[in-house]
Length: 367
Image (cartoon, rainbow, N blue to C red; front, top):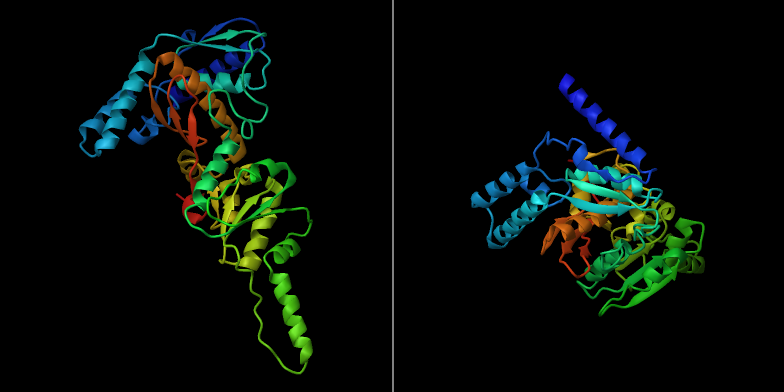
């Protein structure tokens, strides 16, 4: 126990030193600070996350290759993974230029330290770091498109799996993204959300309010007759895509489900995750489809205090940093189980990201 406390103290002191260096113009070489030791060796699939690098990882990959449990494609991927880790681990020095007062400099220092690699940080006030103000909605240097745009691609792929017609509910700030929903053979209606009452809005657009008015007219023709009535939502569309700001999601989805029940397939935009402070809050979106990476899904099951927006932003920073490492290590191709999605890297071209749509249910939340 004393050993662990001393080691944790050493890590904390190292991070304090790194953070303090961010306000100076001095260069920093992480070779001068003791690198992390691996307390809990990663399993084979965790190594695909490219989060940190230890010599033990090579043994884990080799054991998977020798285990004869992988099919031909998986075996080829494992051999590429081992080759990549060998290149990354054997490179003696990496170099990264950062601005001392850049918005994300502190976070990048912490992420660099966790890589467990010899990274030389050069502080340069004139160095332009191509990281956008918003890491989710804007394209990050090195990637083909933004996380928002990649989420749109995933939604387009999902809605085109069948010819069912589509309703898009969007707020003004997501209008341009809503216009990028492009079904191949589906009818499409876009409705801008401008109301304040979610129940009334949902009742109106789903046709329930019209159904109730029609029933009242029929009932008034013969007031003495008791009629059984169950309002039915409209049936001219089957898929509802919701593209609202985070605060609106928490009321809109329950309202739609109240009036529409299970008659519709609900698809959420990635903005639905941006004010989720604990995974249990996701249950407000139960049975809807949401862009969530395999990596993030695994963390949701194991962390009850996870802020998804912060986690995605930090993941985006790590993935930008990872591209710098892969490029300097001379990696020719890599498949990465990234925080924001599955990332496919090749040199001299932009990295592609694919974000799977996952159904929100208790199985996703509980381990």
